Length: 519
Image (cartoon, rainbow, N blue to C red; front, side, top):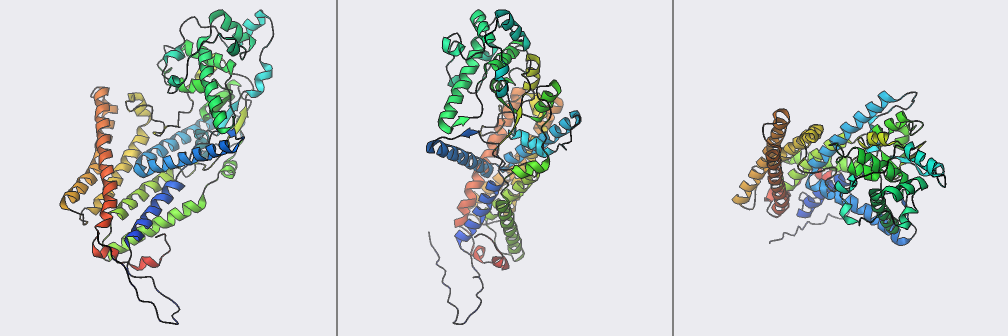
């Protein structure tokens, strides 16, 4: 590979101003594009509130730091590879936040808070948490058998007479822990007296199994990161177990299984719908009094990073326009970076009202525990799991009803993918290392433009007419996404490879070299 060394003569003595050189190097192009990618992927992150803990040692502090850094780097990678996916997720979050805010505003009585989409976003981040810790003194302990039976009826708890449903439902983490019997003395000592009697009489196996899973998870988190803000709760575990037993034949039971597992603790992360229901049933005395200004006060939005990202993107776009106007070559990497920036700005629009960088939740104190019926109602509108890399994706083979619920975000995601592919078509007549790579780029650019449109049409036709079996629909969707992923992968590799095969005029600068920018 030949390397050209630039050699400019020095100005004469007494020169007071020296203009920028009229050439740019390969690394100038690379750094200017990478700066856009890195700034956009960093500043666009609106992550959930982290796990609440109190580190006691340096090791625990380091664990917390590296875990949070790893989450940010992981989402940077996802954004770089598939910015349209993040845009679809942002669209769904925005729609859900707006709906939740309207719902709680309509049901609020004597409430002076102006509920906005920011409150909905804050709830999705895990910002509102309900604590049952202060109810421990109210639990029945050391009373007669008759009173214990009455205490069981207080929350509509009845000892199960069949194999626990929670054993049958597929929890993502269930296989990670052992399922030990609940009748051992050490576990029984942790239960209130009323629940202990039920354990002795009917063997409350799956309550212990739930508490065992959450206890081990709690112990693991506490050992690695410090004391957690939650712990397993035997009474809530009994309520949730009875709830799942009563609804074992309900099709919704499997969908709420993970939410039900989290409800066996003494701290619940609440959605706005759950907060409204809790206030309606008297589980909390009043809605949280938190204005939008209060949310802005606890948001640690990185304004400098956003400003730098916007300035760098504008600098890149102006540079590309000026080069095209001067009939100078633009490289494939610059085109791909511009396409990425467009998708990122659309994501910014959806997340504009979302708090950023919030590290502490707002705790609500429970006035009482829910009954079994109320717990079922609350479980159906709980927050979905957001810790996985795919972010809320339950399965690639989702039900037709679930697809309808996500039609808006799916449409936005596929529309962004189409726009992303269409921008890459701007490099149709650019110079490539060879004709094979030129035609491969053209094919992948067309494929990444047309495939999302096909998938969107296929998706809409299926939702409207259900013209084929669900398994056939799912296979076509899966194959389409695999092909789309291949086209994106080729474009990502080729845009860096072409950086070393640029025409000579690609290194000539324009007047934009004098504008402030990172290069």
